[in-house]
Image (tube, rainbow, N blue to C red):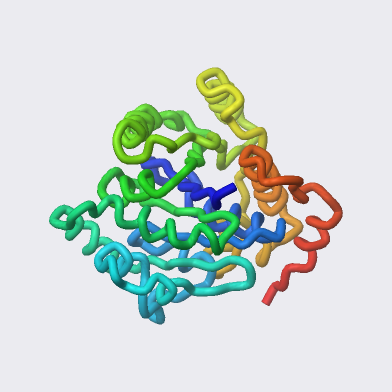
Amino acid sequence: MNCPIIAITNQKGGVGKTTSAINLAQALVLQDLKVLLVDLDPQGNATQGIGIHLEVIQASVADLIRDRNFPIDGTIYEGEGLDIIPATPLLARVEREMVAMTNSELRLAHRLQSLRSKYSVIIIDTPPTFGPLMNSALNAATQLIIPVDSSYFALMGIKELQAEMEEIQRGTNPGLEVLGYLLTLVDPTNISTQTKDTLVHNFGERVFETQIRRSVKLREAPALGKTIFHHAPDSAGAKDYLGLAYEVTTRLGMGEAITHSKRALSLVSGVSHE
């Protein structure tokens, strides 16, 4: 199959969107997949979360959107199985400029098409607001993963996101679909249980069985510029994102996943802590 392009998106902030983008990407790498992470948030949190300092970045996703002839290879920072097209605060300025650009919200989609033969999966971390960048992600993506935190206000904004997605489906990206809803920041409280029950009632099998538990280690890792697998490979967070990767590859029909196998566990245990 063609390389899926998965946008991790929810315009509600604080739901673990960037954490999920980084750690799902790394978990897929542990399944021997070649993964590209695209940071589409001007704050550059995904970029910094895997250890790239913003001040050393020479070219970024902003250049791809601003200049349709900019060489895409010049924006890719290569890692061991996980590559990234980074973001810097320049992207905020480019988003304002997009209003005057021709087909600005389709530019990212066109640029990423040329990379689908080089990668197994492309993951986009999106900004937590509606606007040209969010629409760029919705136009570029083939599937969405929607993180939902286990709080009283968890489902706020999902209707707005669905309406935005349906507009994109009716217009420029008819193949866009929701791969799944992901419950994050889960703890042993009644609110977490109620949120899950409400999600399942509304979205049924599209809710991932895997839940991302609230974790100090998951909060620590991006501050250190590390994925959870490099920071705390034996933690609950690492196990949760391996479980999510298993479900993602299964739903995408990408063949036999290795997430819960001895091979996957040995790979995780062998990740360098340096």
